[in-house]
Length: 145
Image (cartoon, rainbow, N blue to C red; front, top):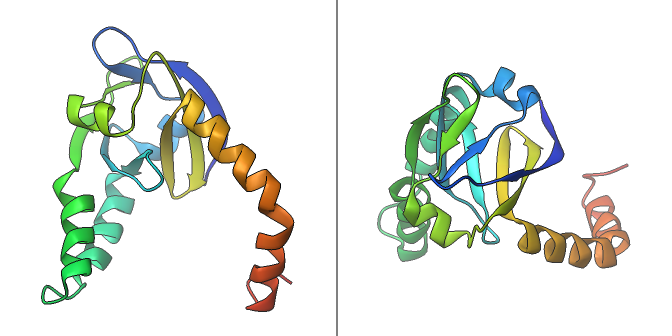
């Protein structure tokens, strides 16, 4: 399981180091793609296969489903983890997530999210403000007991 939060630096060649705990679960090749909430998603090849299979089942005749499929699959890149644990972030993904020098890598069970440092800080503040309401809503639908 991928959990935890780590701050890293993007080097001059658009590479970031994956935390050792993440590298062990992700393997030597990963898929990086557009994420939601202006972050990037990183999947192991195994998790990506499952995720992309689910997305491929979405109807092609419904516009919103086509858009989502294009967004997630069209923006994906398979990248290798180098010998010292770094991955290259393609320019178009770096621009999408507004990544600068400092980034936050957050483990979210089956994926890693890459956030700009400011984006992550702002996102967390918003969630922390509403966490009690979110927990109550999840409890109402039986997701949390």
